[in-house]
Image (cartoon, rainbow, N blue to C red; front, side):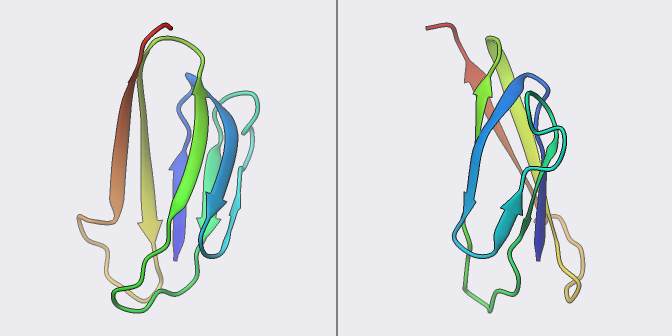
Length: 91
């Protein structure tokens, strides 16, 4: 299984981690943009893996990222992607 997450242009890549497999930041992960790609491998029914991607916002506003999951042994369906939206305010 592979997870791809194009990073928003209004954020700077900081770090990434996964509980299974490996992740690479892609290019240009620094200073802005790029796509994080994580190769998780196989998961049995009921198993899960957690991927954490840290991005620092470059300006106030809405930061949105959509990660997409793909696997070679399953059919595509509507739960193959997830979107996270965060509102950034000045501190």
